[in-house]
Structures are given as C-alpha cells and as structure tokens.
Amino acid sequence: MYKIAVIPGDGTGPEVVNEGLKVLNAVAAKTGFKYETTTFDFGGERYLRTGEILPPTAVEELKGFDAIYLGAIGHPDVKPGILEKGILLTLRFELDQYINLRPVKLYPGVETPLKDKGPEHIDFVVVRENTEGLYTGGGGFLRKGTPDEVAIQESINTRKGVERCLRYAFEYCQRRNKQKTLTLCGKTNVLTYAFDLWERAFNEIGEADYPDIKRDYAHIDAICMWMIKNPEWFDVIVTDNMFGDIITDLGAMIQGGMGIAAGGNINPDGTSMFEPIGGSAPKYTGQNVINPLAAICAVGMMLDTLGETEAAQMIEKSVMNVCQYKLKSLSAGKMGYSTTEVGDMVAEGL
Ligand code: IPM
Ligand code: MN
Image (cartoon, rainbow, N blue to C red; front, side, top):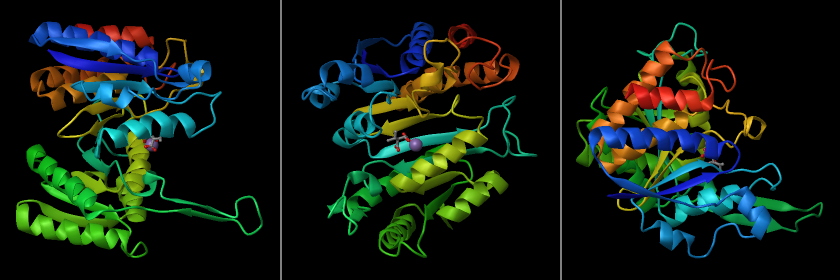
C-alpha cells in the first residue's frame, strides 16, 4: 500500500493533479497495486488566509509518505519568492531531494520548434543537482538601500553534494543503457572553483567506478547551442542547480512545451516529489483548458521510482498515443480537447 501525499497547490495545479490522480486510479486498477492519498492545502490561498507558508510539522509528516505528488506553487497576489522558497525549495532541501530528474523526450506527433528534428533526435535526460549551488541562500546584503549597496549570492558546492549527484547520474546512464554517455555541463573557463570541483569529481569517480560510461564535457553556453543544433548528441546531462534550472526550460520547449514536461525531485533513500515543471498558469486557471499531460507524466515518473515499472510504461504509452492521434497541439486552449477530456483519454487508453 503506497502512501502518497498530494499537494495540488496554486492556479491550475489542482486541475492537472485531478487528471493525474484519475490516471493513477485507472492504472492501479489495471496492474493491481494499492495506494492511498492524503491531500495537503499548501500554497498561496492558504498563505493569504492564514499567514502560514508551511506548518511546522509539515516536513516531518511528509517524511512518512512513499511519495509526494505536487501540482504547482505560485500565486499572483503573493510576492515572488515567498511561496517558491517557502514551499517548493524548503521541501526539496528538507527532504534532501538532491536530484532533480528531468527527461527531455519528443513524442511522435508532437511539434518541436526545431527544424528537421524528430523523436529520433530528442531523447535525453537532465540530472540537475537540487540542494546546493546558487539556491542555498548563501550570501546577503551590505549597506542595503544605499548607493554603496553590495549584494552577494554565493554558489555552494560540497564534495559530498557534487559526488552523490554525479554518482546518481552515472548510474542512471548505466540503467538507461542508450548512448552510455554522460555530459557534464559547467563553466570551467570562468567559474574556476565550483566547476573545478565538479570536473575533478566527475573524472575521478567516472574513471574509478564507471569505466563503461563515456564522459563528455560542455560549457553551459555551448550546451544551449548544441541542445538546439544537435540534440541527438545527448544521452544524460549532469549539472548544478542553476544551470539545470535554465537548460530544462530550454529542454521543455524542444520536447513540445511545458504542457508535457515532468520532473522528479528525488531522494533515493527517502521521500521523493513529482511535479509538472511548468508554473501555476494563473491566466488559464479554472477554465478546463490547461494541458494535464505533464502532470500525468509526473505520475508515471512517480510510479517508475516506486518500482511500478509496468504501470509507468502503460502511462507513457497512453500519453504517446494521445499525443500522436488525438491532440491538435500541446498548448493550453489549443489541444482540441479540455483538460478533463485529455485525462479521460489517457485513462481509457491504458
Ligand atoms: C523549477 C522552478 C523553480 C526552480 C522555482 C519555482 C523556484 O523554476 O522547478 O524549475 O527554480 O527550481
Ligand atoms: Mn525552473
């Protein structure tokens, strides 16, 4: 019996989570696993109502679940940063979800903005470090608000944090068993401390423990270029938190948009959290027009991580069929179907 915490969150989060849960329910009935869900109301509405971002017991309580399923965090009436840092980043950090796994895969029938590229060219995975780098809040202000103001934002990279991320990426690349190539994305020509550590660790542990995996390196700026020009070069990319954030939005665009891009915040020894990587889309909220496929794919990733491989594959196959034979577009309002109809089709197609 899997215990799943559900955080629908803000904006279109609840709408897409409903469709994900519909598909979860259907695939459980087909493959026979059992689960129960507990819903948490964390998000902008709760914060505006109570002034509380996360109750003090939230993290401990969430540790008791097998997985967390998250819709979206971000509210137009709340200053940017409060909910993102107070909920999303706090959960990633406190639950030590040190991997952010983001597949970039173009399904047949889905339109990519890349000319002359198809599903055979766009199929790679980004392993983003998820607890360190520029995201830790290291730094501060000096003389804030004066003409002599100083703002410092530090990138924290620990050997332990870098190494566990690299090991995960090497092992993921082995399991994936495609090109067996792991590309480190960095900026060793300028960030000569942070990425020196990354590069040394990459080569040391790669040579010692993963000799079957080919190691490749590219600077962040060049990766942005190659992801557009030659996406077929990539198998697994590993990178730090900030660079990973940036290149996975680029990745989402070449795989058809935010409507299909899912990610997992993974603690291999603890509770992981799965989410569509797009935001709360306030302008589409409540209209039954948002694309739920990213949220549905996040359920697939959750089941894969829980070991329900067959269920995960069934979901992916059904999503692929809906993309190829049903939807006119993956964009909100242009799919040719409503949010709930897309969820129904995926559930029925399993
Ligand atoms: C993401 C988002 C978050 C991030 C924001 C909302 C804090 O952009 O999941 O990629 O930067 O990690
Ligand atoms: Mn992002």
